[in-house]
Image (cartoon, rainbow, N blue to C red; front, top):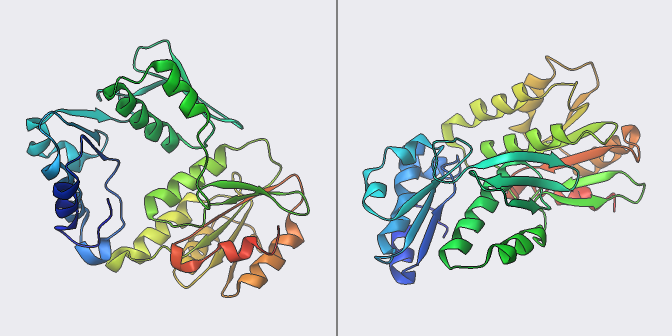
Length: 291
């Protein structure tokens, strides 16, 4: 359920009367309208207001703002997350070019998901928990996860006409999803050079500059060799990154065609490039120059 202001999720939940509700995270989206992560948490927690009496609430137990909420202790809830203190947590985690592989708690059953990034594991755990709630056999849950298809423009792998690999993650971006995407790119070690095109992260309110600087500080030439930015806010990312990169390895543009052209000057068919920015930046238009 989506929202742009407080009260909307409550109304939708009461209408739907769900059997299961899921709170995946408290991110930075909606900061511009709600003002703080605390207020975002309150708005997202409205989803439990329409939950059926015997229903199940799944929430991210690694999120302090959810752990503090007393309402979650009064209903049937399970916490999921990376920490062993959660009801549901991954073990024996493996990441490779084919996706993610893990077991759940102390189980010997392995789950394989053809998606990249540690965040994909937590999403899969939620899917497993929902399947178990509805008594879906374990074998069917495993098979369903093996057949997961990536959504268009959400960490979508493509091949350019010249042979290099593209990760089109241009659908949207927040500080947390940008960090997750960068961390995932850094783990893909089967490629020669790794590059990234970063667009503005919008709707962050007064903390927009701070969050963009944090992204710039994450980047280093050892793990991602070239950085290209598009947009005024993304220039802040470039400003921070230039402190750690050789001259010419971080470039900022306000023209998408120029970015596409400059990338082609340095990329080979052994390389990979990730594109990520807010929906309003439409970075997929850069991809169209390559495929």
